[in-house]
Image 1 (cartoon, protein in one colour):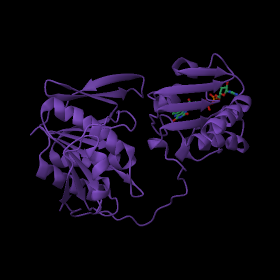
Image 2 (spheres, rainbow, N blue to C red):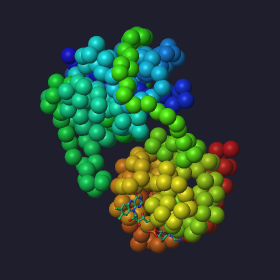
Image 3 (cartoon, rainbow, N blue to C red):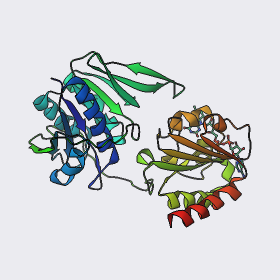
Length: 319
Ligand SMILES: Cc1cc2nc3c(=O)[nH]c(=O)nc-3n(C[C@H](O)[C@H](O)[C@H](O)COP(=O)(O)OP(=O)(O)OC[C@H]3O[C@@H](n4cnc5c(N)ncnc54)[C@H](O)[C@@H]3O)c2cc1C
């Protein structure tokens, strides 16, 4: 029992990048503990994703048709695959869906689980997961002592490394089993153009944008870069934008490759949601703003001059 099972994720029928990130991370773990990598995709069309997952290390790409998302149904189906494959390690996305089913899966499998890992390594045959604690002010390392070790992993925290696996395609007969809740309706009005949690670039605006009429300046930069639009709580509380855009302790936790903060002071509660971003670019006219303590690049200037200039330069470069 040294195999690693990855639960991948689709969005609108497309493979989400987290599926490759987790498969790549699983490959490294499996190579260290001497096992195979199985990547489970909830779909009736697993063949469509097998090539991409094989190329990042999947030995088996398993399709399970569990229908429309339900936390209970997915937990039942994923647990059925765990019973069949008997993995030592299970990696799940720390996504909106993953957060809903992962703890249920852990309870069913009588396994310990570490949520929101941002780094994974192997020590003495066991996985060590690094995760933020105290709202991102510090990090701690954890091991899981149960036979099955489970982890949810933050998007964009793992490198995708090309490495061929065996890539066998399997169709699982796992079913949703008994589901005791029923989805009655959906309100998608808060949906962003690019989803914050998965975005590799985020452009965020704070109180420094002065009012909701100025969002187009920030949105224009975001659109040019193919980025998601984020916001500080001050702008959400002021009613300038919906809470679905809020980044921070009481908003979304994000970990993009690049986070561009425009007119955001960098309060600890905001940093709690974006502090693990790979590169942080801060644009703020106050050189003493705390955001500059975490920024990779800082521009001390008026955002109303800098942001349109950046957008125009990116438009020239990116066409
Ligand atoms: C329990 C709790 C939970 C919280 N959760 C969150 C959370 O999830 N997310 C969050 O963001 N906050 C959260 N907050 C609020 C947080 O403490 C801050 O109040 C908030 O982040 C401030 O938002 P801001 O940076 O947009 O505004 P401000 O702190 O007012 O900063 C605005 C910045 O804009 C700059 N600026 C002004 N004009 C310009 C200009 N023309 N060009 C460039 N820069 C300019 C200013 O120098 C200033 O630094 C929480 C607070 C509490 C108590």
